[in-house]
Image (tube, rainbow, N blue to C red):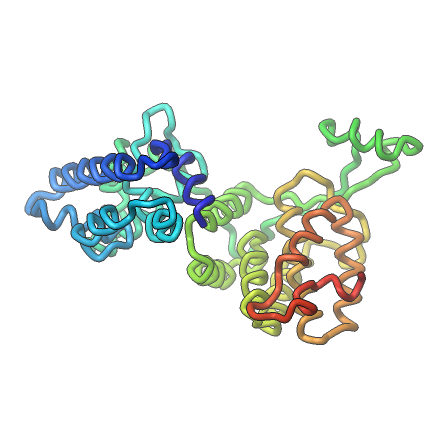
Amino acid sequence: MYERFLLLCAELNLPPCAGGCHQEFFVELQARMERKAARLQALLPGLSWASSLDAISRASVMLSWARTLDTFRRTDTQAELEESAWELTDLLPACFEPGKAEMPLSVVPRVCVRTFAERLQEALRLDAPHAFHVAAELFGARDWVSLAGRKPFLPIAEPLYTYRTVSAENLPELSAHLAARLPLQSPAQRPYAALEPCNAARQADAEFEALTLFRQPVFALDYAQSESVDHPSLLCAASVAATLRVENGEFEVAEWKARMALEALDLEYPADCQLPLAPGEKAHLYYVRLRAARYAALLHSGNTAEAIVEWSILMSRGREYQQEIFRILREVAPHGARPQHRSALRLVS
């Protein structure tokens, strides 16, 4: 988690905390949170200074400002910093101070400030539009759209992804690479399948992946479950949910969730398609992660016959993503599994 903490610090343009200067880092975080509290008090007449500090803390998953200060004080050594990384990660959005040139925000900061706004709404018992407007002003924007940009409507009944076929010659950044690998074939002879997300699905996938950077797995799983109610085929959320279920040893639930997502997607994706998915696409990466999680769930639950069928599909459609597939199957194992049972590759090894 410490690596994610450092990554989020960089995404939010926070000062570096490595090199033993931890207290200087926390002094800076405290000053930024106090500036947020001062602005919040100015925006909400009648709010006391103490209540404003507490509200900023609660929007950062701290019980109170006193708890925030205590966390800063007791995190002194590198070991303590790494041990407290999850707790400290929730504090970082409140310390973000974007410049006008950064607005509308890119995906990771956008997800961070939206999460902060949602928590601020709960902390102050505000209605959602008011809370988001207040949050926008706290981050120096005129309104929420200026800060985060417009969020496209995510269709409920319509397909989120469109199937089509493409050739390497229509993927110029890949043509030279593929020609070097397969010099005896022309690009036209190498068709690929493609799943093209609508704009809303593309943004939803990107935002969910960003969310996993700073949400603990149990909370990421809850969020993925919520997304799957109306949008079971949303690939990033579905793949995260299925993978975490496998890691928790919930193989039947993992397989069911993955199958529901794939069945919703297969309304557009021809069931008999054996073409490999085109390389270099995030949607395709999420798709093979989802199928790999289903394969692992089937295998760990003893459903070998279906696992063999799933493996065949995974190898044909995920041909250009085999490195990712094998990485997942090495890493995805139920907690507490015996060493000889930790690899989902045993069927094909």
